[in-house]
Length: 121
View 1 (cartoon, rainbow, N blue to C red):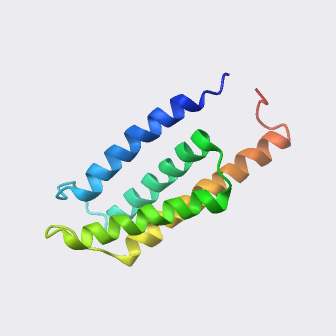
View 2 (cartoon, one colour):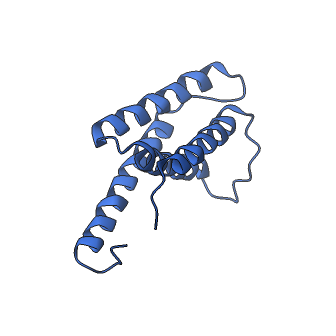
């Protein structure tokens, strides 16, 4: 398998644009009867952004986490200014949980690979 950071950077650009659109637009998604379903979306979005950013740039964890925290804070500051949105500390916590989950996933992957439980290709 050939690693191409440019493909990850392109995917990151689309993910960033799509997620930004979703967090700044008027919410109209179904909750499916699940309380705080938006927190699951925040967690998943930041897991995805963390993965794509890591694959694109191979930044150290402190840099990637700092960039993700800045983006998460920026989202909440902008949402506080929108009449149809609100800023919530819980959203920031969910965002940073997505970053932490990415690093937990990366650790698990590396552990499995190092122990020969997945292909080294």
